[in-house]
Image (cartoon, rainbow, N blue to C red; front, side):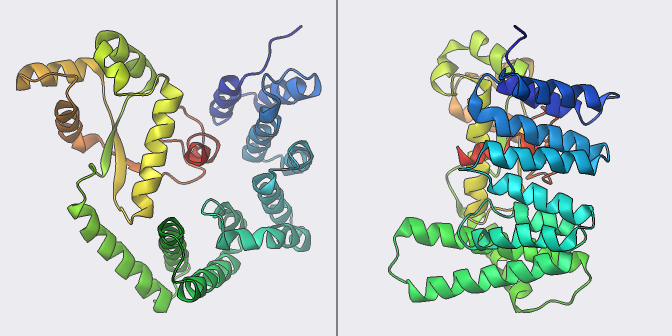
Length: 327
């Protein structure tokens, strides 16, 4: 029997698909594993198909990408909103406008309840429907703001989530309207005020820097071998390390944090820094100061959904660390 297709291999294929001279072979590997029941975790079947969709879309084969997106929806019927959005975007790009808008419109209410549902707006904007995307963002903001006014006694967690959604939707709307060359309106002014307020608030936070220290995979493994006391400071695996950072960045953004980013550390770099400073490389203060010393090499967060992920995997952000924030 051929090898099982693991989540790591799916991610690797997604990375290779960005630059492979033979994308068809990668798609065949993914689809073949699904057809033959060789996906190690059945929950990753939809993931494998959507990575294949992404490769085909990058190669310009929209018709085959659409067929696989439709199949991905069937393979994950209980959690298919993202796959349906991808299918809707493909229909728009294939000039099947009515069908594409119908698919996305059915998901539109998610913008009012799900902080991750901005992929709907991305699909619209990337398919030449930025004006509709702005309209949907405006409607979602109207609804959430009305809801906060009429539910003043909601839990603190619910209020925090609503505030984070308002911030994110307002900023995305502001950026789209700027790209369209539209003049500032009331919500654009709100976006500016929220960003200014968040910058001020972030300066006063004592919970940590806006730039987080990230260890690439090889460095992460070497770090824990060289300094065993750090095993208690960091999660046990690199995947958990980058997922933890992604969630921390999402949380900081939700509090209004701007100019967020990561700096990549190296074991040799930390060792040299600690030696020069005469400090313990496993001490939290040393790690923070080492991160500060790398401020000229910041990787801004978040990348665009279709840009290469900040973690260095080579895979698109929307297929790599973006979903990790939901774990």
